[in-house]
Length: 367
Image (cartoon, rainbow, N blue to C red; front, side):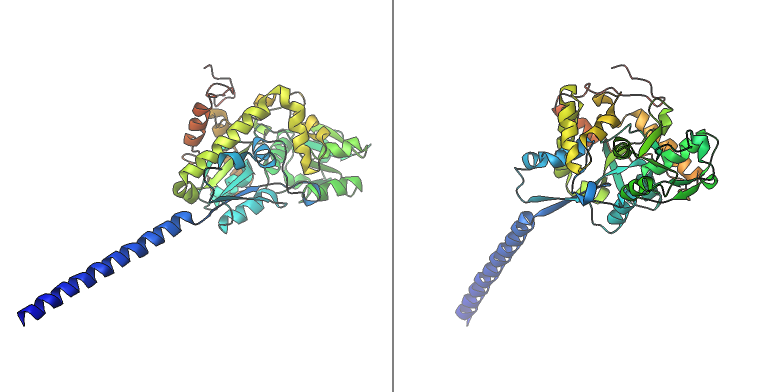
């Protein structure tokens, strides 16, 4: 009986060990599968090319996409797959995609980002890509409208919810007008261009695609924020979901590295024409980008820095967005900016002092 008990105990032990080994094998297989499962990185642009071409232009992030920078930067992570999306609905569409967990990163303008934060989106701003952009006011050729003040009572296109929107509102206020003094019509870029061409509207606030109508001699640009108050500038930045950053800091760093590398290339004056030609893959002519960047240094427009001037700009934008009724609550920008990835990218590429940083008043900071 005792012998039988010993045999039984030994058999049970062997069976237990076998089960334990099998369990470890299953766990190892599960861990291996988890590590090998592809990671989708979903990056969106708050713009789309002419005729829905899947390209963006005029920014370092656009260069990253067009020139396949991430193919090189992520080659050591073969299980990482990048998906690019372009949104005709601009910033508001990006916010909707973030809210539905359909995006991880986006290149988006300041006002829609502020609106998203006001509505509870958990994001972090990582770097600038498309900062210091101007806004234009265009009218049909030979229009009697010659000044901002002439817009009172007129039909004016403004793409609501975009960073052009707040810039337009601030320009109006600076000239003694409010939105309610105009007949404002919410139109995207393509619809605006068609309406100006057919003279169905009296004027339009927008960005560089308006210059194409000037080339066709169907419109005139009668005002630009260039040379006017710096508060009228529009800023576009790379923004990301907090959850993705926490889950994938290595991938986040590689994406920031790629955008900084592209920003350096796009900041070199020797690459000015090449930058415009790459941007023209959008279907908007290179001449439009040439017009948009005229009179400005590439290093100024393509700087990736989140300096004190940009942070102060966002704080000011947030206050004015509430003041003008574009958001209903106060928006706190403190803690929204995460410069850690940018600082590492700048240091690793020897670019820590390459771009000029500005203080909160817009004055150059001495290195």
